[in-house]
Amino acid sequence: AASPGGSQVPRYIRVNTLKTCVDDVIDFFKRQGYSYLGKAASVEELRALSGKKFLLDLHLPELLVFPPQTDFHDNLLYTSGHIILQDKASCLPAFLLAPAAGSHVIDACAAPGNKTSHLAAILKNKGQIFAFDVDTKRLATMNTMLMRAGVTGFQLAQQDFLTVDPGDPRYSKVTYILLDPSCSGSGMVTRGLREEPAPSAQRLQALAGFQRKVLSHALSFPALRRLVYSTCSLHQEENEDVVRAVLQEHGSAFRLVTAFPSWPCRGLATFPGAESCLRASPADTLTHGFFVAVLERGGEEAAAPS
Ligand code: SAM
Image 1 (cartoon, rainbow, N blue to C red):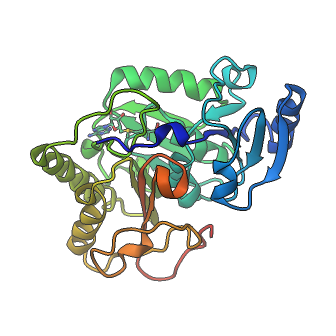
Image 2 (image 1 turned 135 degrees about the vertical axis):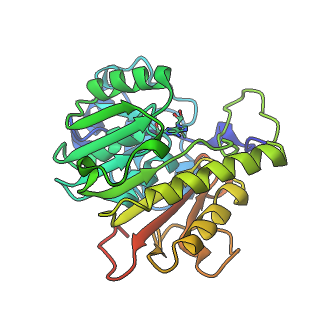
């Protein structure tokens, strides 16, 4: 079932650094009558937010935090693509993939594209993003969103990622992959809407089968160095179990690296090293329910954000 307590999750705003900077957005909201309280020191401070007050997030440098009921859909900064309304947990995958400017990146299941636009901001629009999705409607939304956000240097394809050929010379320089596949969505908070029933064991099994296939496929890209696997599911079957099975299948070619060492909530200890993964939830991190694993090709550890 969807997580309870969704109405307590703050409104997070990611500053789109392709168009503006954090200081200018803070000034804008101050002029709109909001009081800026500085950088939060704890999740408790985020929890205590109320009225027309806002904070800078303690974990993510370009994230502003407002009280839960704040609505910015009509705000000029939103309609002009200067800010992105994106839950904090959903900002973790691109942040932790941390592709270097100039690199080639695949966003394997990309629509509606919030993480793609975040990747482009991290790349400073320098490099190449290959984004795939199967859903035409979501791809249309994504195209509009990426234009509004000022994203350039991306190729958007309506294609099943499982049919994308890792041997195609177009992808020979792809060193980073973000994989955020379809999942049960059991971590999504509903903000007062009716809760979804829990997924059946059969549906979970089907989803996990797809997730294993798509993760294994992603790991077969020859130049890949780092991959982030994420879901908005709370189910071990779609998270730790998928990572464990695929790592086993690939022998010692890839390993888990500790995602965000200072993040308080870790992967379920279902196999040695599972704590390298991270989890998020309304109760513990004041976000949607989420899971992130960071995998790197065996050998030297690349620099990752702490
Ligand atoms: N990463 C997106 C974002 O941050 O906006 C959200 C992605 S959503 C969780 C999963 C997406 O995977 C859906 O848009 C779905 O259409 C797409 N999808 C499902 N099967 C796929 C496949 N075989 N190849 C590519 N995309 C697929």
